[in-house]
Length: 48
Image 1 (cartoon, rainbow, N blue to C red):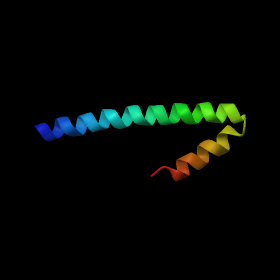
Image 2: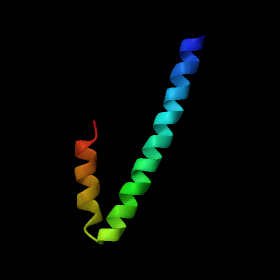
Image 3: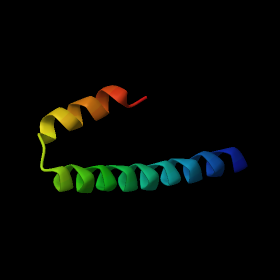
Image 4: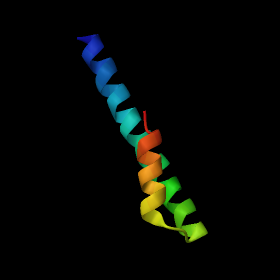
């Protein structure tokens, strides 16, 4: 029972961290005013 709670907690922490990562990435992309598609494509390739 405690294992499932542990995994659910880590799942939500991962979702929140991923959201922060992508909003920060989007802000930096908008700051550079470069090609968004190329940067998103390269970030998905680097995604583990």
